[in-house]
Image 1 (cartoon, rainbow, N blue to C red):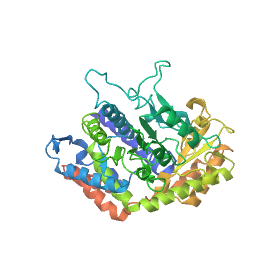
Image 2: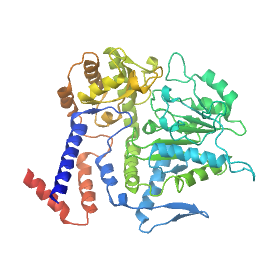
Image 3: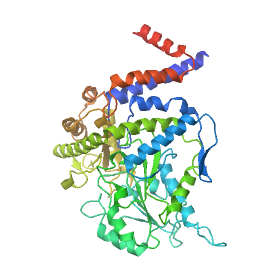
Image 4: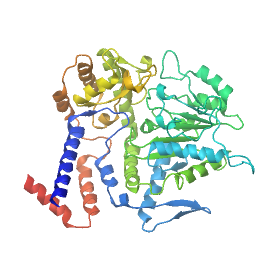
Length: 478
């Protein structure tokens, strides 16, 4: 028991140290991360986190296979309604536990869908051709053959490679699609699935342009938009459903400030010629990809969606203001900034810089981390590999939620230039700077949520003395 206690205490101390560093001392600029609110976090560890609620539609009725799930069933239905309101669409599938799983559910469903009318004796086939954003041009890994698309698209017998073609990019801006070449590619290749979305994401995607070209094809391709990085910017960036997308997938923990989960939303109706695709999507979500779908984070996502629907407009506008102010200040500080300068270098939460003059992105992102600024190195569209990346990718979403405004990001740009250009140590300055931004915004104020967090926390533990012991320990420690 003594050895076990020693290991537990050691781990607890390390957890505490990491928490203090990440939440009080450093500036987090990873574009795929966020810190949920205290209410969202407490939901994640509440009783549903250890429960199951498998269910599926059978003979027109939703059948649950466990008892004791009335509460979580109500939560799932309420979350479905809240998300439908957020997207302005009728159909939402909540069971994927990550954005990558959400994408794989779509790919599985597409294969099942295209084989629905297969005649007896015909071989089961994969998708003939998929169009997406190339990985080295910012495309998301999960939409690549080496990611979630693996094994769902046919191979070219001549090359042995999957039949995937990429959106062409413009010569004057490698982060935008060349729509003239795109129109030619669509007509020449006729993909069955078109996947928008990126992980290096600076500008809008040409959804309406593509929809206008393919809408009268018979059969027409399915248009999918992987909004993993920009799910929390739905509306201010673009509204894919109004532009012709059939399906939107995404992660709920990047710009959408919820727990780590995935989501699928769709406008596919019962009258649609692809109506059965939605049935296949539901079937590939469960039982095709999940059993238990992590009910603690499901509950937490409902709380986060309440927050997002309440504060979306102000949050989204501040994200865009901050990102553009940050990009311009970095440029003024002598750092090369990627993206279209006429549009403020970015239309999203992301800012991408080119640091080849000063070193590799790999080296400089590590130097920034040593100075309490957390970013991630990024291979740019003209790089050969991630091993010697020329870029660094940053996102403003988490620090925006902690209250940073345009002038604060301008100050931060100066510190980053000190580190990258002048190799100055600013670690202590960043720790001091960060402590100005501790209070989380775009959620209930701390004074209103604290009692609710304490009530939920106390209710988690059946031993009523746990909370009393905790308070007594804290009192004596003080």
